[in-house]
Image 1 (cartoon, rainbow, N blue to C red):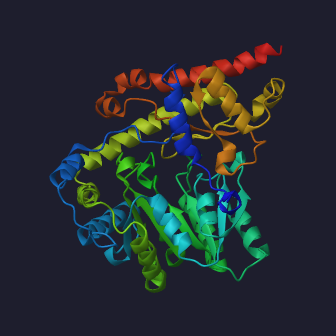
Image 2 (cartoon, one colour; image 1 turned 30 degrees about the vertical axis):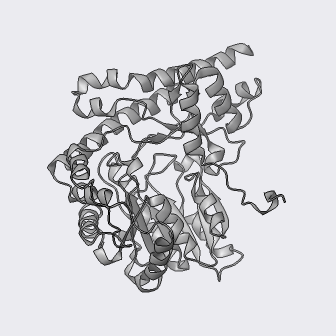
Length: 421
């Protein structure tokens, strides 16, 4: 009996797929790995030591997470974000990715609203939860941000206003690297409040705001904002799989029991040694605080230089404000690329990988129309450990793999122009 007709149309995550494909190709040739968004920095030594001390712990922990960890997480975010995080409203999960899915899975029916571009997994997660997905198209002129006018227009005309509306908002953004100012968040909050939008604010890159000036949406819309974060980006511990979720007080009594139900029937609890190590990270002692400050300096310096290099070559790129991504727009090269058979972002990225050894992710993976010649560039192809301890004058040499990758990309672009001259 064939089961094909009964299988969900869920494919391999684009971000994980490009990492695996790049690894295979790198066996035989040089690959500039701009496709996978993994922190280049090592986990702080004190946090690693905490993991080692607790490596023998094997017991199941409370589904919601260790009380001591939830208290440390709440203290950390109250200090970092100026938001009233409380331990009883914190849920610990195996990465923020699964926590976001758990929120979606807690609803029997909802409409999930995404901004294009946005992270690759939000839409598949919404479909797995059985929800309708709508998208709002952002533009380069707004640095790929959601605007109040866009949100207002959608809320005013949506087809099923009786359904809960779950907006997933990620900033600093993956794939854009841009973020929102206080004024922009306040203006968005006014619309959200007017239409009772429930927001999953994915602030996983918030601690990596390059100026340390991240502002949580929960400061301006506390009653309707669920905030997610975790250790994968600012602590360099992606493979440890530890995420955090804060619920608003107005939803804790009805939504938290459902989330605990989802958690208890799926992941049960995050690994005990990882939770113990996370306590050390979220205590944010002097070692960890210095580590984060240095991460910000390194990423800001390299991000600005990489964006400037692309813009000088006519590839429109918003300067990054947080995280480690750029979202270059190749539209100025559209005519030249069309003459060599490249009319979509997927074609562009395939040719770049095959002919230049440069791995990018196409804009279509992030919900953009395929005809838009945009791609995500993750500028993490450098020695993060060396960068953390280097003097300023040594950083250009450490950044050279990224600059070499940009040279390969731009040289390939110029070759396409010459080939049709």
